[in-house]
Amino acid sequence: MLAALAATVEAVYDPPEWVSLSELPELRMAVRALDRPAHDYTQKIQMRWRPPSPEASRILEHKVLRRTVKDVCAATGASQGQLDGRAVVLAVDGSWWRLAGPGEILCSLDAARDPVVAHEALTAAFTSYVRRAGS
Image (cartoon, rainbow, N blue to C red; front, side, top):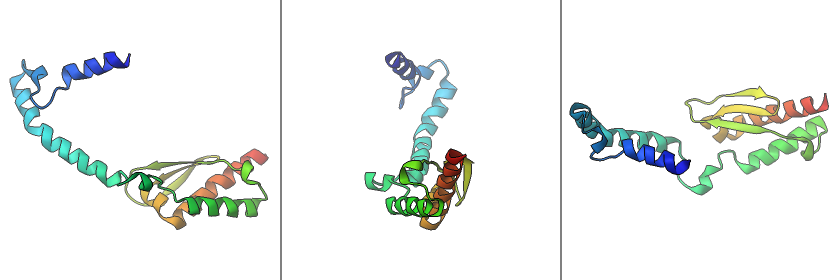
């Protein structure tokens, strides 16, 4: 199935000459003119959000996570094994987070990178999971 999909993509996505658009010369000319600038623009935008190295791909710092788990266990009387949570980090502007459900937060990249905000958001996620599990 993947081979068929790849063949289909190759049949229509054939830069830089765009031979697949030969029957539409005006469109082919426009695509050829805009392909490189569009590619460069999207690469620039992606680099803004993509971590520069594998080490930087850990957006939520481990020490923040560890401290949050310790704090939630102390506050709720739960053990580490009773905690569960998930953070969905979104590449959007601003620093914000929302509890999406028991044990789950949605947060911006800036919020995840800020240790104070990340601690607050993770505390809400873990605490909401403990409350749900305890009910």
